[in-house]
Length: 278
Image 1 (cartoon, rainbow, N blue to C red):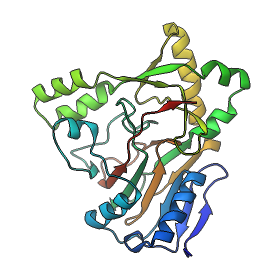
Image 2 (cartoon, rainbow, N blue to C red; image 1 turned 180 degrees about the vertical axis):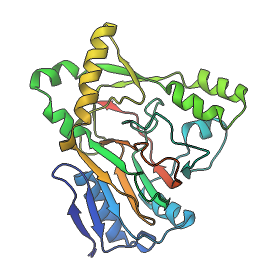
Image 3 (cartoon, rainbow, N blue to C red; image 1 turned 120 degrees about the vertical axis):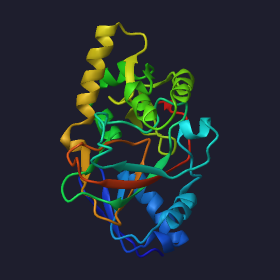
Image 4 (cartoon, one colour; image 1 turned 90 degrees about the vertical axis):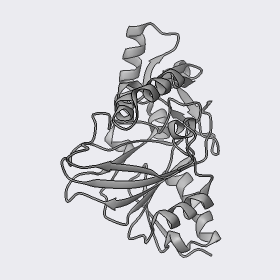
């Protein structure tokens, strides 16, 4: 039996896990972590002794690591994603709530993120519970939203980031390849079947079938809803901290409150599932 201990961080979302080193996790530990993630949606483990190799090996036990959609389109196989910011590479203005890659046909099932270098102050990550947000809607609003779809696209921020790293012709190729996807406004979790709000201010542009002003009003309401403090947990990073989160049950964001300090996080996302309507 696993000896790990799980302590909730809030009444809605997030838990601190102790009693396990992920590099040496047993099969029993892994099962306990998977059950804890379904319940708490975000798990935080401090003082983990991982490098990219052991980090990837643990993530592979959780699911198949998947390259970023753009990396995969260009023929790359690298699965580690590096989030790096310093004085010469400041964090952008797109650090608002989002689900990773919701502008692609599939979204990851889970993410495993590790702190390598952290600023003295700021640089936290926040997660929001989209199931709790759904339950906070009135029954009439739930009925209205269920069955609707919304358009997600990368937007100018993703293209701006690519322009800093690749030739313009490749950027234009990516822009014409990833033109956006329609996903349900209310999506069901692929394991628990729980319904959740599946729109985000980072990538959701409009609700299909509504007039522009109607779509804007409904999305503004939903964006405000998912950011309510009672649905949010916040992690202050320390070196060696690992966060695991359920991409189908959460949104996340990283406020730009630490520039020009250096912050480096390494991430593996595992699995790929097309969001399904509730």
